[in-house]
Image (cartoon, rainbow, N blue to C red; front, side, top):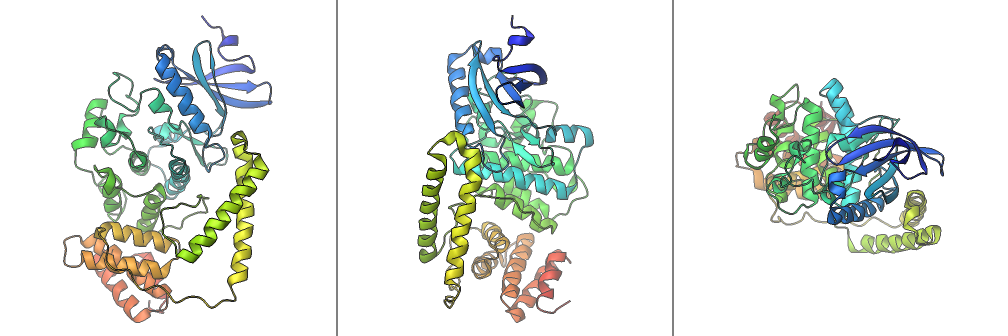
Length: 446
């Protein structure tokens, strides 16, 4: 039997057990070589006995290590095996987890919740861009740094240990409450799976309870598959405007959910009327850009990649230090390019796009995302499509949102006559809200 002194490799001194669960144990220890406190996660002995599980655990841990240096992601320092048990060494964060906060205080302040979701969402979106799916997003895997910001831990580790499935009896008691319907059915996971779990976390942080909370993990997992999505506004002092956001975020069909964590959190902020903080998100490739701008960005990206290679020498292990330098230099090039082109007359705004095959709800959420990025002309075109699809239907709530999005986009462009009419219609449908008042104020209307 291992003694306290040989629980971990010899370089990790004075181990102290700080967490224990189905997957294994977590120790706080002192890294003698680098002179810092670290957290060491050891895979449980019952999994370590399975050679296939050990191999998957190590492969997933190495994949997660590629994310070190990405925003709000726990940094992994080492991956290895000791006494037949795989381990991961990561940064030690003193602030506990969001699970601790929920256990101690219940529902959290909405502004704080949105900040945490922004930070966790940035990490999840960045991981998806790297092709890594978390598969076990839950409050216990959202760690708090000393400054109160969130870091996401354990990317892919649940899958490596077989914990993203109900097929292993007794292994999912702590995570069944966050399983997406496709996980509960044993189907393949996708980025939409993580986004569903993040929505469950958001629901719990805002209300103090999971949407389908039950004493039985099996009953709770089945509810994710079959039960009607509950109203979050019925669970506490929260506005009814949040209900359609959670209906989409918790949709049974992955294709009906938000396309990214950033889009989900933006929708929450919009309905709560709060301002987004500055959270770094790497550029994402899913938004179309004009061909000329796309060419410039591609050239800048290639230049940035070359610069990164020079700075890091191609060593992935230095990703944590290299990422800020790469971003800083690319920003400098972008700033220079912007200054150079400012003297050129701006091109005319593009005509509104013809209606696409998207639903009125999906188009409304897309328009909201464009407003968040101050892309007024594009938001106008998409919002017009949304209004066209929602007019005459029964979805008055989303029609109100679409009318606001279109009115706001027009107000920002100085097209006030039509903007004010649309904003007043939105107000009639959903009542007075500060974003509507602010948008009308841009046109001098109180």
